[in-house]
Length: 128
Image 1 (cartoon, one colour):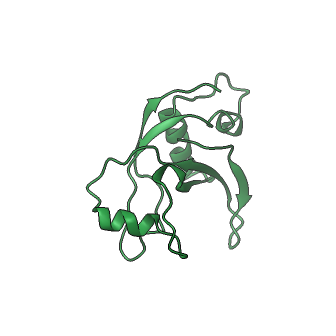
Image 2 (image 1 turned 60 degrees about the horizontal axis):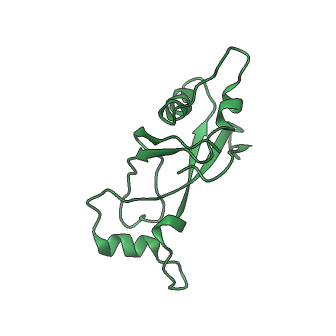
């Protein structure tokens, strides 16, 4: 579920503009072993975070070659520009509360460093 408004910034090396959308997990549909899941949910101090409290930032770069990913994500959320005057940034502002199913790639030992989603699908629309 998208948990808040996007943050807009530029990459430090090349100055590429991007948006970062905060999201969290409501369900886990995976073959991930319980041991790996517990490892990922455990903080450095040993406390375990509930899955619903684990957050992930979805980062989308705003370049001609990469913008399609953000457009697809927004469409999968059930959002599209209503007219030509509405920017993609305007559409991003409507993301909080929306839900999708995402496939997250992970690799061990970098379990805590999740990559961006490879696919999304609309689960439920929630208008706030």
